[in-house]
Length: 224
Image (cartoon, rainbow, N blue to C red; front, top):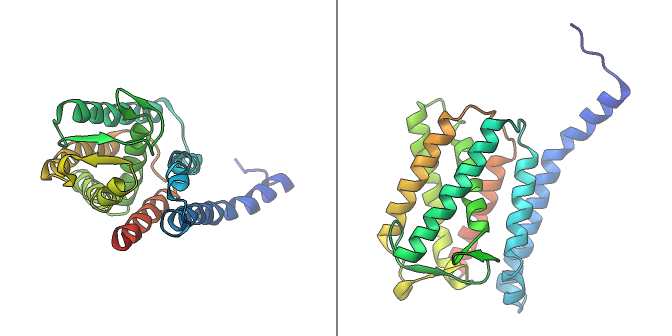
């Protein structure tokens, strides 16, 4: 059956080709402003308090490019959010999984001493690194390991930045090895879920979100 091409279809296609470059530009500009604000504005606390808005904007852009909001994907999103959030609740209150740490005020409203946005951050990281690992032709298990390692790479650069800007703090101001072991365990389980869940995984913005985040935190890491 032939698809009818109308002027509206042509116009929509024309605008669609600009949507990805525009989204990437917005991501880059917003993170660049945050980078400048934290390091050079002289009003560090103001820009720290913008962190929740930055995270929400990043996720809004990311999931605007998700193509199929079926029940499988919605369940995936809810479960990854919940597992990430409750892993942090367990970690904060018991020291299990990650070590002894507490959250500051920069990430916004908390439930059980854990910022609600942490669950969203876990979802964003699992989703973006899972997409990047899918660029390979590897076995699904190898992809899950790659996605996990990409999450650990980003966390390595986030940790000292997080302590500097009141995201969270570690007992003794030292990041324990248990943090990375716990991250690997939780992230790997969620990466396996990503690989096995039957939803469309062709988000064009996913890799850019991860790379902008990596650039942001690597830059802060070396300039602290």
